[in-house]
Length: 484
Image (cartoon, helix red, strand yellow):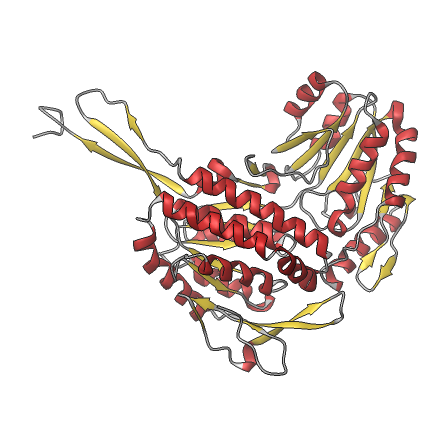
């Protein structure tokens, strides 16, 4: 299996249904532009609503067989996929850099994360278990765990391997089949995942890939969600798009698993190792050009150590080196405009400012003196910046941290673990990391959001449960109320 290629032209990433590429009329081919290279590196077939429905039909047909596959079969396929990722790590790292300009090493890091995740899910899927529910008479109440059915998954572009692998391997491990709406910014990286799954023995129709131009995405997405065969939606992306997806899903009474944006705070207490905390905050803010929903967008510092910590943070920002840049000129422009808006409303730039270092890369920036009328107050910048705040005491730090529409990741820096636990329980965030960076994830942890950052959990048994439903089969005996 490989992308369709045209002699002398960039390769074409197909719409992939039931183990085959659909014909790709030239008028429906769209470019994938590498910001770093400044040129077209791939073309992709922009799927139509009718083609999207074909993908649903293929998934629905395959589900009738795949739902009965053994957990051992699913485990072995996932283990083979993880092994293949390792074999192709260099290639997959370069592929991601080619599409989203993340840097090859960051791309390879994504592959390593995906390998760990897939192996964890593979281990977990052999432990899907039902139970026997209590009964008031001689009835035997058997509760089975069954796959929910064909699902639509929509992963983002900013973590092509890890996030797409997560949205795919978990429902497949649960016994579901998938319509995979790949990102138009990284369709080649996403298609590589489909290639690998099928090379490792996944039956045709279990995993089907579509993608669409942005102007066609809404119609294509609704065509899938509206189909009666689709039983659930998994979306990772912005809160703005998440609201739209949620409305469409509600229209057709489809449940949704959502992981949306964040405005991650890092709380620096007066007893913290300030130099280490500054390094953690800088890394959390600047990794991948700030294009992570887990990014450290805010740093809240106790007044007693604010000035000293600020000096450490400036040094950490100045010494941070990353080859990443924005995945598109539009993303860089948005991050720049957020900083310009802060400047126009009187913000102080402790380090950097709204300044381009290249056609799609911005200077790392620390912003202070934030007011409520600034976009940066509670809008994801998705750029290499963070905002600095002063807290008078722990209660004030908690109040400021919780003063956001989002609730994804947070961090606390302190030497007092008891204090960290007490504060962490008060923070309205789904994940809280003590003495580490906010962009943090491990395969065995439940990952998701609260408040405006979504609902549901991914990874390991938590993720599998999102794609399983309980079925009760009650065996009535004797002269029970409903017995013979």
